[in-house]
Length: 593
Image (cartoon, rainbow, N blue to C red; front, side, top):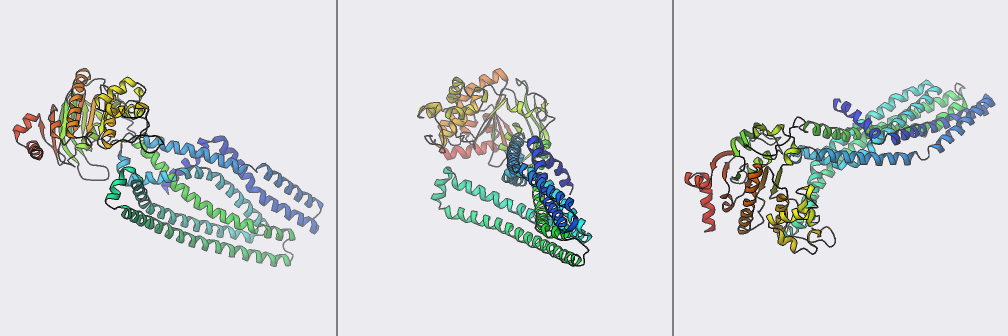
């Protein structure tokens, strides 16, 4: 209940903030439409009473009400169009806000936690409906006006109809229970639906097509998709059937109560206790009463869905605010003078208690190149994430020239970084844009892009393209050029090298798709450029690689084993120590021999 109370203000404000004029006019017109049918019915009642002997004045009043209601109905004939236009405006505003919120969260926890991913997936599914539910408030208020007026007219005929209010609340309660059950079903469906989308994306991805066919995985993937879809459908069907059952019971009880009240009124009319007009009013209001009760129940259903979806929307806004690192406002330095220090750094991924890194102490002097070595899962990539501040350490701290990294503005810090990763993104843009994304300020600087291509050993890739840097890459567009994995990786490296003189260059196995000779040549070329940068800005290069022919070029080699720093030194020093590094080096050397 407390969450709903916090959600209601956001729901109320969304439509009027996104489209204030449209929302206000829609609310006015729909409320006017809500009163036209009951007023028309009351006008008929007055006419009937007048004809039955109440006098010409009563007839005139009835006719005036009928004419007035018809006029209002004509004036509000475009209310539906206005409401739809309002919904479109609100939808665009909400979708834009969701994109803004998710892309401006500086960390990546929301990408890697399953519980958070489920909520974001649910929000993406419901994003368009949020626009509709934002203007549902207009329907809700007009329904309240209609129901109140109809019940007031009935109670004016005879007090017995006041009992219908209780029966109406019973129908509303049944609709609320139905909505709750369906919401619970939707939450249970979400993990299955998310997995279905992931499996479909894998099945459609051209990069996966060869492996799927070689291993004959088509039927297996289809079977998994169908299994998860069936489980999602079972939850949906169960929630739907339970909801329909209790809502049907509420409707039956209400209609039986209304029928009993009408029968009682007929008896009273035969005794002369009520007028013929009153009886006509009750009979003519019958479909409106049924419609009002149904609309009230539907409104509760929609209110429940709106509160659920706006609850997730509010959660995202709260999450974005709580993870905005608002206290991190210091500017990143223009030059490193001392270096980067890790003091007692430990880290556990959110939602787990397992320590991925444990009490890491390390000083990386300004202007040095560092290689991180260790088995898969040792914690190397996690350390890279911490240095780029995708996460903050669970314990300990990282210092940049003695200043806590957590105090630096994340955008300012990342503006002084560059990075190349094994799992790089294949942006299906032009070749110029694919490289230029590494430094958006220089995306149109062809000379800078060609320099980056040279540093990334990617000049030959562009030279083979039909229209050079202007060639559209990928497979999704007509006339585009597809590249091999190695060619894509060279362009990703060029993208990483476009940003000149970074304070920190992070290379997390960015040459995995290249052969050892090509990797070695590339790093030799880059080592020369990085030395110049180090002399100018004190920049640091951090390299993660399993190839020791490359690793040995680093000034400092750090060996990580099971989340702990076990050795650090130069290639010669570590070989002489005969520890873990020497063991790994000898294993790889024997493999090459």
